[in-house]
Length: 239
Length: 213
Ligand SMILES: [Zn+2]
Image (cartoon, rainbow over all chains, first blue to last red; front, side):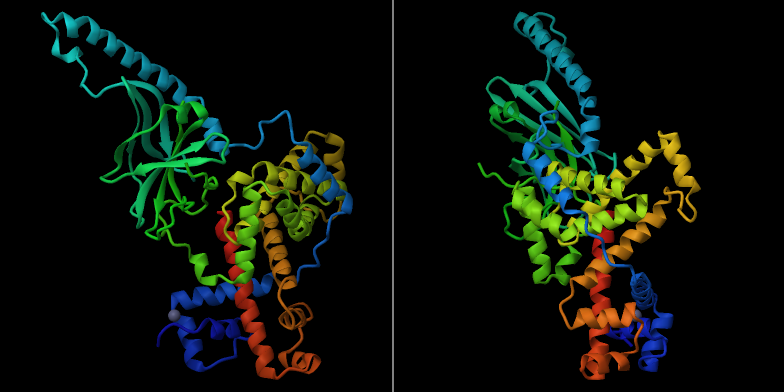
């Protein structure tokens, strides 16, 4: 037979002798139905708790007073999950190193590129290499698993977010890249990872300066909804 | 530029299907909770009041059972809702997320309260010497308490006559025939209410468990 109706399994959880024999037989041999039956039995066992006890009215008043007073010691709300806050220091040195390397490359270009004679090829950077002004290590949200990196690159008159992600999973949907403000409230979409896990997105530099520094990659179902799905597969803060 | 709410830290595991299973259980109540969560995330203080009114008893009872001290339980309850307000951007507006999220915060605040106690040698001694008090550090005991309280609240929130029928069946352990007589409904109707009620409780508990992962 096909799987048992949940209603019948609920009946069995309440009374193991209840219900048609074929349902009982099926629930005894089918792992899925047995699991659901066990889950129902577990819920039944959890019934019986004493009534919930409301806190005294003063607690409500204190909560609202504290919320309305705000907390000057803390910046509004924790803008990003703890894990991110903890990691915040990490990308700093990376950005510094990257910026220093870019600077060296730039100096090299200036000295050798215009001099012409005997310029070692290796020192001339590829034409599209700008200055990395910030970088972020991308990680999964539910663990520290590496999900690649992102960088903010400034070249002469453009500003680009480069994303080089890995292991974004194979959940159906497109991968969309967002910049989330450090205030944790505002965000903008900067584009889709159209081919593979790498992408470059031109953005106005003011965005970064204003605080849109958290790079987030979401999985977006094909539902026509332009807002963030809430399912993020990678995140990191540019620093 | 479009300004839309912060995507809360999703508790869905990486790689899971994008379409949430919760959709299949959707009902009006779920929509109302989702809307409430969205208002909180948007910074609406009246949403916090509604959330407090609906779940403060759950949080307070959990803290009371875990800490066995009315004063500490009050403190923890206050801390949980203030922390909920301050970290509202981390909430995913899904139906089960609100109670799961509040209980998650409560679990941390209870741990903080226990750590504070441990620093206070006198009180530790007092707690340990209490007959029957568990040592207060067993997470699985706490989790079981939390689940029982979630089930209790879910039953409390059922519409009548299902609510009454569930209480008679599960709390008073009355037979279906007795219940049918008490509430004046056919036996088949009573059976159906109990089964459907059990399925609903299961769904709510699963939702909270899923969001707690
Ligand atoms: Zn089956």
